[in-house]
Image 1: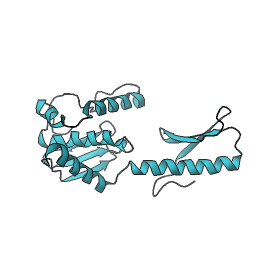
Image 2: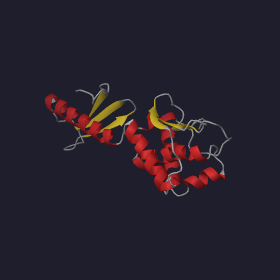
Image 3: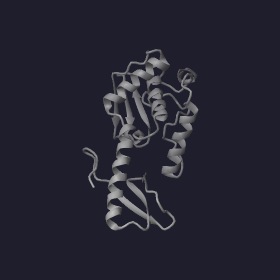
Image 4: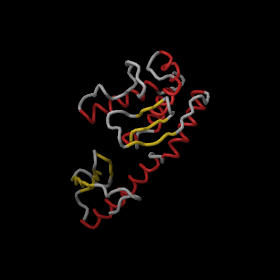
Length: 190
């Protein structure tokens, strides 16, 4: 079973179930792919289904994991739609260096970095993360002016709750260093 593109081959766990009769499904749990299959499948059928389901999952995730260029285009569209095009980043890219934050912005040079942890999140949550960082180009702190910039986005509160819940599920509790959009002391990087 090959990974997609340059991606490493995922670790796969197959779970057989006597109760499962006709359906096969797959999902990610941490760093592995879990494939749920009926117990009656032969080893050859299981291999075929595992290949098929991993490929399907990869395709689905690829649609939800834009490239750096697509991420920058998405940010530009969000700036136009919600910030009247006023937030003009010099670059928007994925970052593998951010394990505690969803994104960061350096207003002085206009750069935005989005944590690779955000790859695969629902589009409306990724849009919130991008808008949050775009807003920092216009308002570096989390003061009232900052939140007014995000007010036009209809899913701000829902996305903040999603991110907080995601971190709770992954870590067991919310790390205070994780930026879920809480009002904090002003700082140059978010």
